[in-house]
Image (tube, rainbow, N blue to C red; front, top):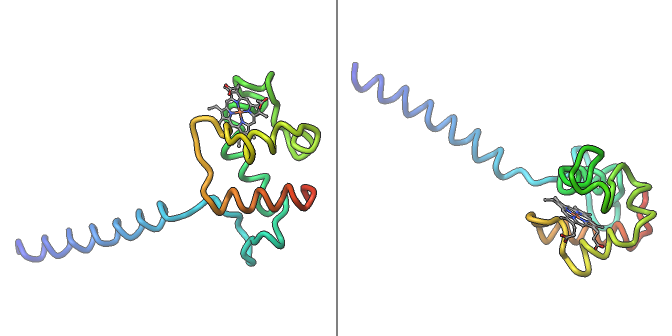
Length: 117
Ligand code: HEC
């Protein structure tokens, strides 16, 4: 009886471990059938989600820093050269956060291509 309980507990533990590690391994990558690369990166498949996740907390319409730069869509990025500068050149943004190497590469490619929608 004690053994059966142990086996059940072990099974539950293993299942939970798998579920958790899978979630933690997820990167901020766009959903969709094709992988996003520096060749096909757009606002819709990558950049929009990145700005929403990494910047909107502070710079979104309800953010405390909206007076310095208001993020409210692609136009608010296209119209302000400080955005690319702060993320890719001075790397002062996202403040208190980080971008992975691959996120930075994709973002650089997106700016280089002229910020396609
Ligand atoms: C935790 C809050 C926070 C987050 C997240 C954040 N910022 Fe900022 N941002 C600030 C603060 C504070 C300033 C004011 C300048 C400073 O303190 O560096 C600022 C200033 C800026 C400026 C104007 C500064 C300049 O260079 O003239 C831009 C543009 C900017 N942020 C873009 C972004 C972008 C793009 C992201 C996401 C990749 C981002 N920020 C994420 C807090 C944040």
